[in-house]
Each structure stands twice: as structure tokens, then as C-alpha cells.
Length: 521
Image (cartoon, rainbow, N blue to C red):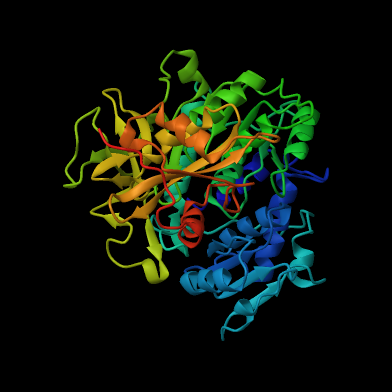
């Protein structure tokens, strides 16, 4: 199934139902969105004209992105959705990996990397005429293209995700796998409703989407909303004040947020009326207990966990009905979804029994492949399994718990130290606002744990106080050996903690012998 069918079926069944609201008040019906996507697809060559090709989409999050994404699918092409924050180096690398024949951009960030490749067509959607006019043409004038059917292994999107080297990796996602994942999430979260889901009534609050559309989370939230007939309320970027304002204005009932967003909402200095929100879905990265507690204490809203990755799709999740039925387990990220198989593997790569900690390996319909220079055999899939790099364990009920990341494990004197455990200890200090723990090379012990700490405003906390605080609460070999006070932690464009950047900072700035002795047990 071509993912464009999701919009096309909505336009056929409920053309006048509101499909999209933008933060500035503009709105589109499903019929208008489909008409604009059809006109844009005609400018690109018409239905089926780009089958087997890739089209780069380098525009900011906004209504144009959604219209162009469906337009690309209508032509049969794959959409290479490139992070709008990329500049020449990362942009050039993304284009090299995905090799699009056409690149759509808005002209605001003309980068030399786009124009220099021979044979590549660059279309500026900000220019009058052509595709620029097409995406604003919402008239149903008989140009409502029907997207071509696609093969089971046809790529829908190329999404760029951070690699261990710091350069983005290009992950191919499939129409079939993406649709099955969305349908499974809908069945899991909307028990009692039957497919196809009717379009929501005008009185139904919209689904707020404040995740970047170039990333898997933003795209899945949008497609999921359209699939279940809900209006998307779209933000160009996450801003706490704007989010609070829109939630109150539209009486939003459900939110999908990254932990960083929850952290910022919890610390919002003004009044924040989130009384309409019934639940929050945590996505994008591990939700630390301290962040969860602070959010739930301030707003009294339950947080539903979700675990997945760009490479493997959604793996485990809790729904509100699970919580009502008493199935939810504290500390877990969710119960495995239907169609997803997980093995917890030890260092010998053999599966471990329930309750034992190891690397999470996943086989699902969403697991696909890297493209470009990372497309070698086994670079993503190993005999049909994705090695996630995450560490955790399963219980007897197939409920999944996370422990950390394989590459973040600190080996201190041959003993395992998990940064997440130490981060929770440091965050429990009343004068700490944020913290991250990394390993620092050490001649004697191999590595030692070091905390980077953002103090609360006006705090007088010191390095030595933090070291002593941690040492009083964990085994000696785990205790942090240094605490570096900073104004903010480095984060990616979607708000994830950039630990690779933190490691680079530490390597540049740390000095030999400048750490405390944590001792041994």
C-alpha cells in the first residue's frame, strides 16, 4: 500500500473534514490537502513518473512539507526527508547517501551542496509559478491523482539518523512496514473502534504535532492522525509558550512529546493550563524517572511510554486501555507490539532468558536497511535482526525495560557502570536542573564516570559537593570522579542529549589527574 492512499481515502470519504491546522491559524480540509498534493505531483511529472527514484525534501516543518511529502509518494518516488538544520557538510553527506534525482527546497538556505551535483534538478518552492503555485492550489479541478500501487519492499522515505561516527546515517523505510506499524498502533490504542476509522467530528480536539517532520516521530504522528481521522495541529518548532497557548486554545487531549519537551514544560515559569490533556506519550529517547516525576507532579497527567527507533520502528508501547486494565508496570517502556520479535542477547550474541540484561535485538516488518555508503550487508540487518545498541531486559509477560546504551557503558576498573543510574542520583539533588554522565579515559582504571551538571538558577552547588553527594549514594566504584558545571547540555535539533558532543568537550577540556578517587569495593 502506497502511504499516499491514507490521504486519498480521507479525501474521498470526508473531503470537507478538517485535516490540518497550522500554528498561524491557517487550515486545510482533507480534500484541499489532497488537491494541493495532486497539483504538486503533476508539476513533478504526474502519477508514477518517478517510480524507483528518490526526491529530496529540504524544507522546514510546515504545511508545505506535508503537501510535498504526499506529492512525492503520488509520483511513486521515495522521499528523502533531509533535516532543515543541516548545513553544507551534513547536507552534502545526506545528498550523497540518498542520491536524489530532484531536490525540493525553499530557497532560504541555498547550500552549494545542492547545486554542484551534475544531473540533479533543484526546484525552489518559494519561487512564483511551477511547484510553488501548485502547493497552494487547493481547488478540486479534476487533478486528484491516485497514487500508484507499490511493491512490498518499496521505499517510502529515507530518514537520516545520527550514527556512531557523528555523521547522519540514511535509513530506508518501506510503505508496507510503515503502514502496518501505524495500523498496529491504532488497533492497540483505539480498542473498541473498527477500521476504517471515521473522520472525527469538528468538535473533536486536534492532535498536536510538535516533532520535526523530517524525522520519523513527526512523520508517524502525522500519518497516524490522518489514519484515524484526526486533525493535525502542526507547529513549525517546539516552543514552550506556544505549546501551552495552543493546548489551551484547542483543548488538546493527547500529546506526543520527547522527554526534553516534558522537562521544559515542567520548568515553564508562567501558568500552564494543561487540564484538557488526558495523557502524554513519551517518545524519542529514554524518559528518566526524575523528568517523569517532575512533570506528573506539576500537571497530574499520566505518561504513557513508547519505545522504538528509526531503524526498527515502534517496538513496545503502553496504551491508555492498558493502564486502565492494570497491565502497566512501573519502570517499563511498554509491552511488545504484535508482529515484533525481541531477543535480549549477551556478549556471546546468544539469547538470554527473561529478567537478564543484554542488548535489545529486534525483528519486525519495519526493520529495513541503510542506504548509501552504509548499505553493506549486515550494516543494519543481521539475519533479519536489528541490533539496536540499547540495553535492557524482558519479563515473562513480554514487557520491556531499558537500562542504557551499549556504547555508553563505562568500564571502570573492569566493573560495569551505567550512566543512567548515576544521572538519576545526580538529578535527585535539589539544586540540580539537568545532568549527563559520560566516561572519561583514565590510565589506571580504563574509564571513570564524570558528570556534566546544569545547576538550578541561583544555586551555589560546587563540584566537591556533587562528588560527595553521589559517593554517599552508590557503590564506590560507580561514584562520579568529577563534576563539571555548565549552563546547558548539548542537544540535537530534536532535543536529544548529544553525548558524543559532550565526550568531545571533555576530551578537549579535561586535565590529567583532575579527578577524585572513588575507591573500590
